[in-house]
Length: 374
Ligand SMILES: Cc1cc2nc3c(=O)[nH]c(=O)nc-3n(C[C@H](O)[C@H](O)[C@H](O)COP(=O)(O)OP(=O)(O)OC[C@H]3O[C@@H](n4cnc5c(N)ncnc54)[C@H](O)[C@@H]3O)c2cc1C
Image (cartoon, rainbow, N blue to C red; front, side, top):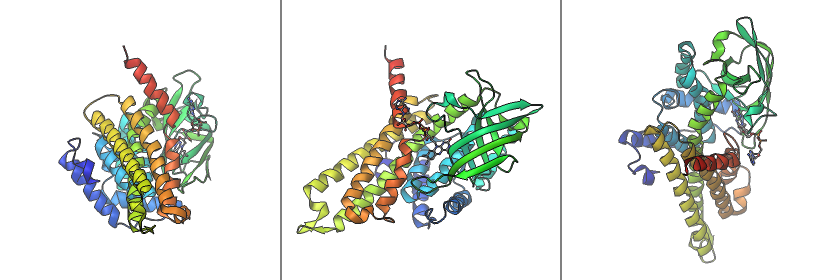
C-alpha cells in the first residue's frame, strides 16, 4: 500500500499507523467465519480491542483518513476484521453525534472490544427508502414501548447494544434513535445467512420496554443521526472495497507470474497484461477518490456527500470488476470454494448494496451537482 501512502494527503502519524496495522494484520491468524461466523466476529473484535486501534472508530476528533486506512488494511487481510471495525463505528458514531454523557460511557467499552455494537435501521418494507420505516416506539409513561421488526442487521446474535431507529410519530420528523440493550425482554433474534458469512439477522420487538434514557438526542432527531452516521461511514465502505480489490490484484499478479502457459507464463500473455493494467488503473482511481473524500472531511468540510458518493460508488463497482477479473485469471481453481478469489468474490458483493446502493449514490451525486451548478 506504500505507493499512494506517500502522497501528501497523509500525515507521518497516519502513515505509521497504517504500516503498523498492516504488519500486525499480516502476522495475525484471523478466524475463519465459514466455520462459525459469530465466534469469528467476537475473536476479531477482541483482537482489535486489545490492540487499542478502535479508538479511531469511536472517539472524536474522528479522523476519516485513519478510518479509511484501517478499513483498507483490514479488508485486505480479513473481511471479518473489517466488519468488526465497521460495526463498532456504525454503532458508536450515533453516540458521538448525539449521545448523552451517560450513553457515551459505552464508547470506552466499544474501544476495548468488551461491548459489541450494531446499527439497526433496515426493515422488510424500508431499505433504500427510509421514509417507510414503521417499527414503532410508543411513548408510555416515562419510557417507550417498541413493536416491529428490523432485518438484514449485522451483528445480530453477537451485539450487546444496537442503535435502533424507530418511528415515534407519523410526521416527517417522526423517526427517533434509541440505544437498545439486547438483553431486554421482548426481543428475539433470527439469523439470516449472507453470501459471505457474518452474523446477520432479524430483530423482532414485541412490547420491548425502554427507559427514557435510551433515547439518543431528542425525539425526531433519528433521521438526522442516521444520515449523519451513514454519511460519515460512506467513505470508509469505499476503503473496505479498495482493500478487497487490492488483495485480489496482488493475488492475481502472483498467480499470473507463477502460472506456466504457452511457453511462458500467464503474466506474459498480452491479453492478461491488458487486464492486469486495467485492474491497477481502476484500483488507483478508487483509492485516490477515497483518499480525496477523507482529506476533504478531515480538512473541515462539514459535508462531503458528492466526494463520498463518488468514492463509494466507484470503489465498490471497480472492486467487483477487479475481483471478477482476478478470479478469471485464476481459472477454474479460482472458482472453487476455499480459494482467496472465491472468498473475495462473495465478500465484495454486498458493498454495492448496503449503506446506499450504487443507484442511491448516483442520485446523490447528481443531486449535489445540480445544486452546485449555476
Ligand atoms: C451483508 C449485509 C449487511 C447489512 N448490514 C446492515 C446493518 O448492519 N444494519 C442495517 O440497518 N442494514 C443492513 N443491511 C441492509 C442494507 O442496508 C439494505 O439491504 C440496503 O439499504 C438496501 O435496502 P433493501 O435491501 O431493502 O433494497 P431496496 O431498497 O428494495 O432496493 C433494491 C435495489 O433497488 C435499487 N434502487 C434503490 N433505490 C433506487 C432508485 N432510487 N432508483 C433506481 N434503483 C434503485 C438498488 O439496486 C437496490 O439494491 C445489510 C445488508 C447486507 C446485504
